[in-house]
Length: 224
Image (cartoon, rainbow, N blue to C red):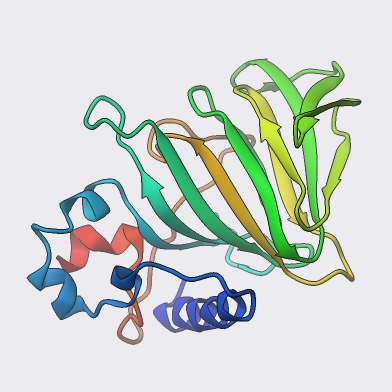
């Protein structure tokens, strides 16, 4: 992805979050110099990959297959005491986050406002194999069942609990507008606990055609 494209997505995301009155921590708006001056104090932010995260999953078409995320808090397995994570995401109409599951992480996905979020579900007994079995799940503590590959539609305020080995993909329902999506989960580890089917790239290769508006989580190693 070009840095200019990432910057444009980031600015639009800031506008949408402001419209929905969702506020970010002060360090979200630091300059590169601010980061360098606070590198030691903000060690948890850097080490646990908190912050801006924009990916096209290697598709080359962010609005067809891509996702905007901001990780607000996260622990680190076998490294610190925090056992939980929280993210805010923006999902456009028909913008797919492809099928994936987690072995360690259980998560709640929450529609925080805007349009409707569509989630397709499969269960797995081992990585890479989506079973033909019915999928049992809960939305806001209420039990439901869908057939393999079945759809769940979350309106504003609704949430779903996704357990381990539950393959899911999601996208904004066409005609309903973009969606502000929350995630509350166990510790998130993108390096070892994301299993995409079929495999895709998690972080983009960035073409630096202009300076970053804000650093992404995958920029920390290169800029700091």
